[in-house]
Image (cartoon, rainbow, N blue to C red; front, side, top):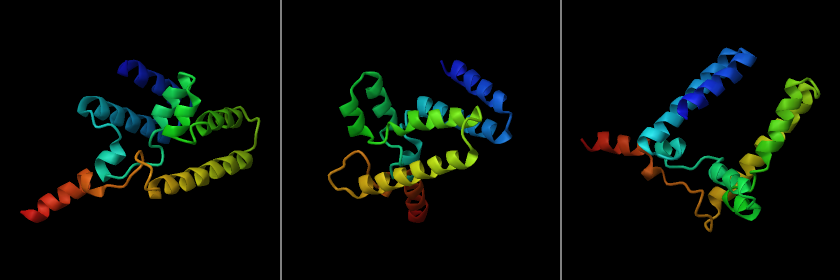
Length: 148
């Protein structure tokens, strides 16, 4: 399964032939491999102890595949942005919309993600997204070194 995923990612990178895409795909492959081997879940939370803006997105998309849209919104209220963004990306790649239009939508989505992330992070009733730096690898390593 992992080989097929890496092969498919490399085919996508070959179509665009940009070095940055290849680096991004290799980084993604390393993260996926680390998650599978180490069983760490989210690498950002594992390293920092703080959930990332996309926390719950995979679980939300799995709920959408099961046609459980209410459950998808509970895991991440912006699950619908990814399919919409994919359409805009395809339209941009096929030159059906301008780069300026694409960038405008990209920045709107980015600002929306940031606003929802901050709301979820600061909402005490939200148990899915939380900041617990003491659980992160970085702070544990620093405190471990300082105790010696």
